Image 1 (cartoon, one colour):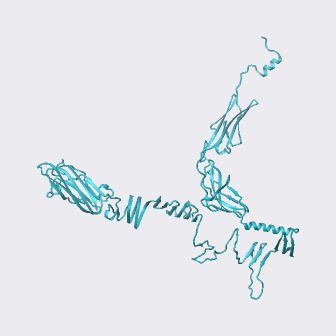
Image 2 (cartoon, rainbow, N blue to C red):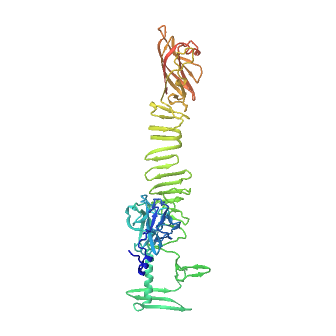
Amino acid sequence: MSAVIGERDTLIMNTVPRYAAPIDRALLLTASATMFEVSAAGAPTPEAITFSALMLGAVGNIVFSSDPPVPLTVANGDAVLKFADMNVGIVTISASTVIDGLTYLARQTVAKQQALDFRPPPAPTGLATTGTPSTIVLRWNATPANYNNLSHTEIWCAPVNDFSKAALIGRAEGSEYTDPVGPGAVRYYWIRHVSRAAIPGAYNDSTGTLGASDAEVEHLLQVLTKQISGLQLDGTLARKYGVQVDTDGVAGGFEFLAGGGQINFGVRANAFSIAAPTGSGIAPAVPFIVRTTETVIEGVTIPIGVYIANAFIQNASVTNAKIGGDIWSSNYVAGQAGWRLNRAGNMEVNNLQARGQITGGGITGWAWPTDGGGGYYLGPYGLLLGNYSTGSYIQISDNGNIYAPGLTIEKGKATFSGELVAAYGSFSGELKAASGSFSGELKAAWGKFSGDLRAARVSVGTSSEATVFFEPDYPAVSLQSSAAGVYVEPGTFSSATVFSSNEVLFKHNDPAWPAARRIRSGPVFFSINCTAVVDDQLSIWYRLNGGAWVWMSGVEERQGGDGPAATCFGLTQNISPGGTIQFGVSGTNQYLRAADMGRLYVKQCQAIVIARNF
């Protein structure tokens, strides 16, 4: 095969080599995450997403862009999108480069997803109404900045301040709603927020917020003013008779205007008044003055209006009223009948029925103030009285529960803490106290006591069947104290059965002493039963307050050697406060010294001592 030597072939070979190695080029774009997941609290995961671009088979300058535009931080071939800059729900990030006239492009799409929040939204605040001639406009505060799960706000309305009669009339996406009620209407409103999960929150208040469109007085005045102006301007429909006065370029006078079966009388003047006639015996009076222009008289500005010295009105409709003095009912008699409200804000009434709440001081609703203030609340939720932050308060809920420092009553069960002082009283039911003290006399036909109860004397049961006595400074006492064992003085015979002295040592109500061996002061009956194997005599002894041993009873073993013996005895002793009594057993008799106790043969000894309180 001959070589290619033609001019055409040479040109082709120089421009496109026929056997050039293929080159694969591609632009790759990866993202560290594809979604910002936002928790119910508004925290994003992750806080930022990194986009990394890689050009395969070539080197070029990579440019990042977004649709819609969002701020990106670009460095070292990467672009970073922060959650704080994610001002849209979804965005597409693009990376592009141009190499040898060809454009290479790669894309990644990321989204922002809010976690489903099942928490109820907060209660709305700041609901207020504004009346117009035909509508009532409602406005309220926006939700807190840290709550971003609001779907809409429901508006409920009733003609009276009773939520049971309210109906849902609309919903608002923002913080305002207009109710087209017509002129002269009165309504009560409640609102609540609803979350994106369709979960409603609490209403703004249990008491409705009053709203009213412009009163009929204002509406009628607008209509009358328009009619009068129309009659004055329309000369073809009205017959007119008038007296006109011109002075210094100002025209005034009065007119009779008739038309349409009506006759109207009008006065055009800066001021119009009605005065008493003059004559003998007639007191001068100007009970009625109308000002149509503002003027200044002796330095006092007199605004436009109607001025009446004394008015007797059987039925009045007033949009707004400012009272400079006191107001009272026509039958008012101080301390007896009627009502009176003075300008200082004090009111006297016979009976007061409130359909909503009554508050005072620093309390404005069913919640204790967070600023440490106090006051009172009386309303559908119950009663608040006092200052919670200082511990001087009482709260009575609508379900009958009572809360106060040291006292809680829930569902009829009372819990006391602190000091309970009673001069006299009776109690039934269950009384529980974690700690506290009681003074006075507490009588209970039936009840259960737990905790620390201290009193000078408390009896439980009837007078003929008193079972337990309590004394000051001791938390509890057992009805029956008992101890098993025997106390034997150390002796020369190791065969003697020796028990710890504490096992048969009784103490007056020492809180640190075992309850089974605590006794009350005063008369206490002790029953002692003892068995043992002795060689001579089995005796039982006692001593008070650690003093000398006193012989109680004894029995002689009659077998001529060691043998079993048993003895028992009953003893009543007056125990002094803080006193003790101890019992012991010996193989001696009453004629031997107490120091000899245990020196004779005693074994297999068992003693039971029972103390009974009177």
